[in-house]
Image (cartoon, rainbow, N blue to C red):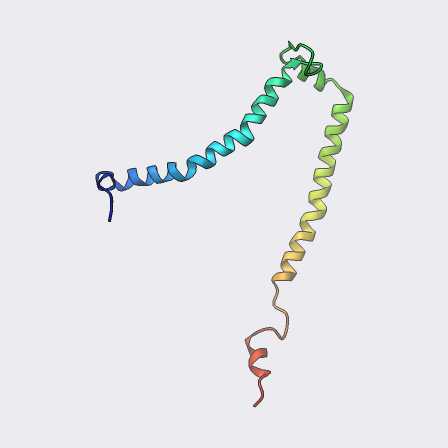
Length: 120
């Protein structure tokens, strides 16, 4: 039996309400556990902060300018891209072939093999 409030709502309004009830907790968890730390990390990256016990100083995008002018950063970025490209070029064909061969039917495993194995 439906409640009186359900009869007053249109089907579209019920769908929106149900979506909000089911998706709301997931959106809150996503925001709280994933997006909030990223936002805090960006905010901290705008500071010059030598440690927890020492005072911090706002430097803005100076940290990013220093990062982009650092040779070690560009070497690490290049190594990351090379590992990514080479890893994908090697792993993807292996994964495709593995999936292809595992999906194949082996001889003697079909229906006719089961029927012919019975004693007559």
